[in-house]
Image (cartoon, rainbow, N blue to C red; front, side, top):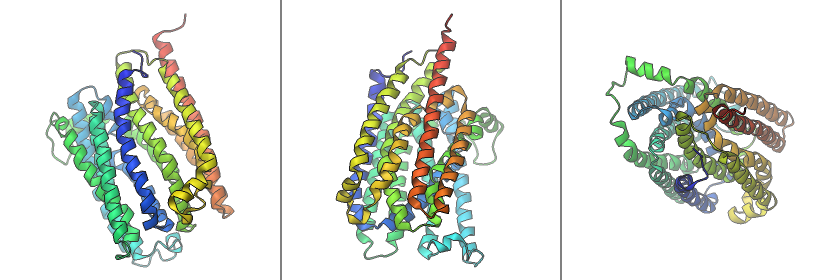
Length: 445
């Protein structure tokens, strides 16, 4: 079986990509207006919050949603989905309790001299943002489960529709809060994350409607405790929480370190400039890689289950996508600063430097992340996890050097260089695994 590039792959990818392009096109167009309603400090604070969100989402599902696609039967896939939804609910409730506990401790005076207070995050509005985290985690987790169900059954139109609905909802609510911000000052802190939360709720409703029918084949179960069949099923898919979850957690944690760590020591406007650069480089790259990975994952899982070759088209795909990424990155490298200043105004001058730092990393990442399914279908998640640990160490060293010199720009530059180097190694590892698999099927005499 020759995997992409063929008509069905192009069609499925086009369906997913069209939804992502429309959704993110709406979001990007809205930035032209939103960046005039909100300041770099507002965006900096919002991205610090979202950096914690990206890490916590991984814990809320333990990455069990990935096993839905490769489950041997539809009944088992539905059973895993129900268990993952229950897990996501429990983790979200736990986070809500911890948020309440943290708020009480913060106001008890025990943390009066911590770095958060030095960064200005001790204001009441900033502290109250933490209560949005459990809700954001819950709705993001459910969307991931429902999206995996749709992916299993190749309901790509439903996934595309869900992405568009989420984006439209987020933009409308953010735009509304931006208009009201001059009248209600607290919306400068809450407007962006609250708009995101309401947009996720809209997306949750759309995804749930699309995937609800696939859950009916799952056996009925109480919310707690777990039955014997529940524990058995979770044990069968233990590689996902044992290897994929730690790998994703480390990857997400290290990717968000600039916001979580540097955000404690540098002003929020500087963080805002870097966050805008990340948004307009990483988000398009993630759209492409997530779209291709979803289609590749379903196709490759079926091919491996049937003991069929993955085909040489993966190599062609890497060459084509990598070449396109290099060309686009080269153009942005020279025109990023004037383009961002023209679109968003003079208060965003300086974003171009961070864009140029990020571009080499993005050019490799867009290809590598399209092939992350390789570790899941071949059961080599442990090596992926080791690579993520290496990347974390290199990123910590890079940021530490920048912090020791009180140089935010140097910290970002070294961080991006370390990230790009590990991505190159990971890409080579994925290509080697597919090549080794094909040789085992048809050994060379």
